[in-house]
Image 1 (cartoon, one colour):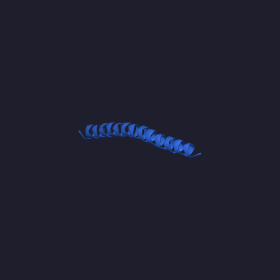
Image 2 (image 1 turned 60 degrees about the vertical axis):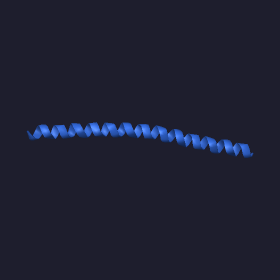
Image 3 (image 1 turned 30 degrees about the vertical axis):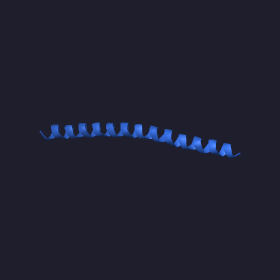
Image 4 (image 1 turned 45 degrees about the vertical axis):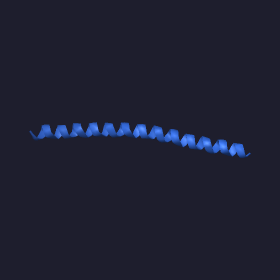
Length: 50
């Protein structure tokens, strides 16, 4: 029974690690996309002001 608990805890830790990796990669992609949209918006405002 003790081994089952250890295996379940290890699986939970690994699952949390993998979810953290996936979320950090996804968050970076979202941040890059947001920066690109912000640059385009600023560029469009600059063209309107000319």
